[in-house]
Length: 511
Image 1 (cartoon, helix red, strand yellow):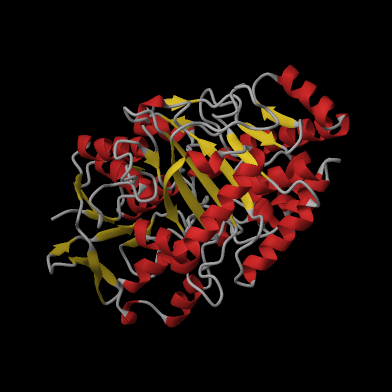
Image 2 (image 1 turned 90 degrees about the horizontal axis):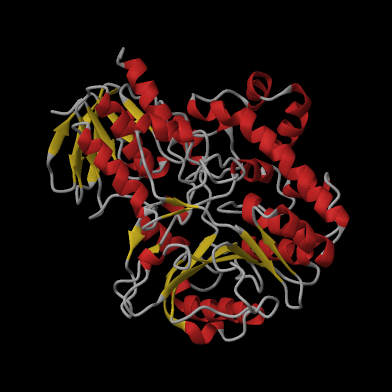
């Protein structure tokens, strides 16, 4: 009989399991799929190229605290993307953001303005200072926003910090004096909108912007990194650590219910009827799935309503691509490293108004004409993912789409809309569509089905919610805990929620 059952072998669940097993507890991880990883896995989904690897869900590692990696003794083959951002246009202008600051400044002055360069430097300096100050707060239970500012943030930054977390992307970016709306849109798309049900003027989007600037990985220079072998390397490495410390990991073991008796957890029942007893159950599943596993009598209606109020439909579309070659960008035909970074495809005229309209269309159930698109290729940086035929992987990470198109379905709309998105790629890099051999598309309902995430929301709980406004680790049931992405500090591949949940469990057990 295990001391602890962890429901779900996503990265947070595996972190919790590894830390508890290392402290001598008998831990069993139960995963319904045939492999660990949750949404952080390397898959081979293409029939035309069955040996082409791709990170189908999460695709970069940026936010895992280095202190946590050291505590776990987790070693990962991290590859820095340098440059890390590529902003193409339909003319000769472009920006490659990388470690060569002199070249970056040259591009800013040639293609944009000195005011934009100064704004870029000032904003990133401020965000770096906030990142350094806030870092310790991610590896401990959350305080309120104001208490966090008082305890962790230097006095000069406390008001900007609070205003950022509560405010809009619009308000924050306007503070720095950017002249180019294209640059403001780029930062809003990649940091504020990612995985979020929020537009340019939505309060709380600033919280997501801050979260996405919390990268402190060694050698990263504050930029998100590629993991050699894809994101499955992260979770497979964590699985090995669980086993190393004596933990058990079972796949194809779907939990049908969490057993309780008079407000105390007793264990779980698997789909096939097998009962496993334990005095502690930690759920890595999203909170909405988890509550369906617990009998109505075990949790009050008020508690259920408070959790249900955190639910938001997913607004992310992921189009995984198998390509027979790399495209050629009109603005930068020669290869200067533009196939390693995140590529930002943005409307070229009235960009902020266009993005505002795209978000409004999504809220009305429409598929936007030009949504925000991040486009990337991983095989140029990590050739280990390529197959013998030399195919490249690529993907479009799209914000925003409705959970279901109004008056239609994704089954009816998917093929047409993917072709439309590829036609946008063709505007910047003519002929891209002709390079596509096969697609593996994940709309919000397919994210829900493929990864087991309610509503297809990749962060479980919107990152507009921060600190103690996120899902608590403890539940009213004695011995039942959460450790997933809906908890503090945020949704993404971080592992801090798994770490903090393990700490809460150890404290409750007097360990």
